Length: 283
Image (cartoon, rainbow, N blue to C red; front, side, top):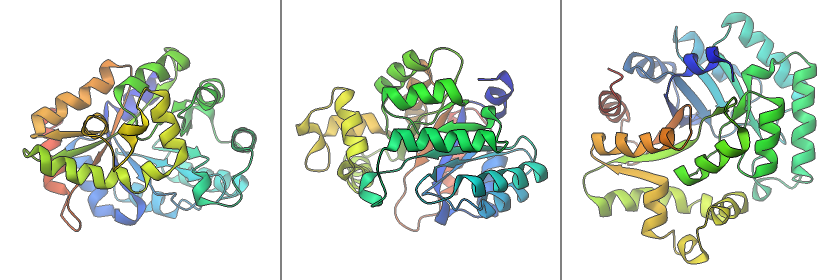
């Protein structure tokens, strides 16, 4: 990983689904001091939304988490990358991944297809140091290490981050996603976190297999997830306590932590982001 990319992202970013994002919210996150906004939910490969978010901000880095290789043609994505890069040089990180077998009938030979997709992007001019992979298992982590700037694992506790760092080595970017709930009531916080983890993630084999590799049992993965599993995947409590839990990802070897703040449906997330920014000493 180049020092420039590490400095550009900073230690703290925000993950939010594409359908939940506006230029106004991106500008608010920039003002709060977050270094990056990661656009989830398989944003379209034309990258129009990415361009809108960059247009609304001046320093925030925007990344995709992720462009789905089964959904968008690699040549189109490379052309879109070039357009965005020309308008906003150095402020976009292209995250790509294979998604989930439950989501597409075309899901075959995912590693080989992802490796070929990466080759096409690189051949079409996407710089390796602006490309990252949604990597969970050792094989794709190795691909991220050898061919791109690094990895953006999703739904991983610090234990996975520690193992991922061992595979990646010291150079590549490691930017795990970590969910969080700002609520001082543990039962209420776990209930909100469990609902987000249970559906869809505990029904997706990529994630359940990865959690088993990290030592979680079938009992932990059943009935919406054990309290211990939910506590590992969803930091919760007052903002300072959540900040301390998020810092465990850095202690485990992360360069940049991507926070997915969970709120009640239709709640305005901005007060929570602001409280978290203060606790992380961003503002």
